[in-house]
Length: 378
Picture 1 (cartoon, rainbow, N blue to C red):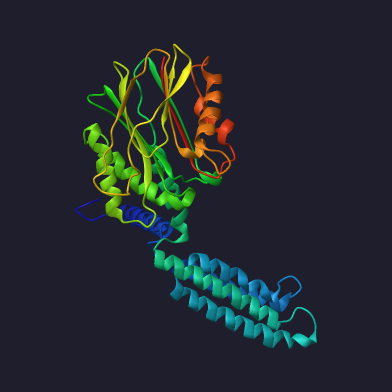
Picture 2 (spheres, rainbow, N blue to C red; picture 1 turned 45 degrees about the vertical axis):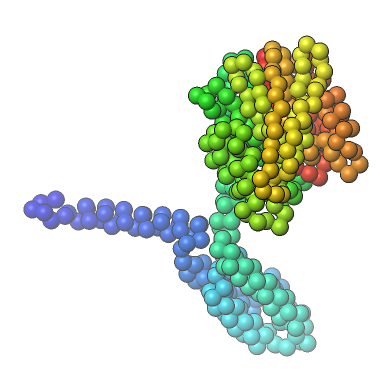
């Protein structure tokens, strides 16, 4: 640069930089669904006469029904207004093909009434899909990313904090039907300067994708409440939150563990949840720890009374949802007996890696969300 005037090389570099930035921004916006779809529209409009020309030249290789290809792509990529322009071009191409190839009675590879019906039907369903995306406001390019992000948020929120020496935890969540989303979730935090572990295991009414959206909302709300209130105030606040949502199917069960990591003493608060199981290392017996409390989201002013216990060396506390122990063919008592029987096999190994295997053993093919959490004192 001389005398404040940029050299041609500098101007070219700036222009290239602006062009790269613009292309990158346009690509990001398009992927998110915020950008214009003109580039896709132009590409598909160009492909329509190309397909028509191929049909006229080589009808054996390029069938007249091949026009459904740009129509399908347009239904996935274009907005409804742009899609109508593509349909007009496709209709014009069909008319040209019919005129050039002659009447369908003249032989094979002609534009028949069936061809027109197929193209029209595909176009109709493509328009329905485009209108649905437009109403929802989530284009196909961002829909999968959004669902992936939601799944990862649930997974991250369900992570348990690290425990001090002498403790370890195991957890496994298994959605119904092998889906990626579950109505069961966990939120946890170290409170009281890290001395106390608070864990909340919740089972939202419904299962799989039906319950996943409510589970995501509740997990965020419960994560904000946990540690912000004294332990005895958590479930009443969670109950009030559900009542304010006014959902048609708005109840949930929940169990809240408050564990002193120094002494091993704990409190359990329950809202209609299956009992926790405490393995006493001295006796080798599993004791049911059943706290009293109603379902969340049923009525206001509910009271939740805790039950207390203490984890000594070698003891284990197991929290789980009803999908693990209760089915249409088996009541909860039989399910708990089967679960504890399988759990006894992992006492010698200290329950390392046991959560996943226990679900596989007792509820592998159950069509319900399943969650299992183990807190072990070494």
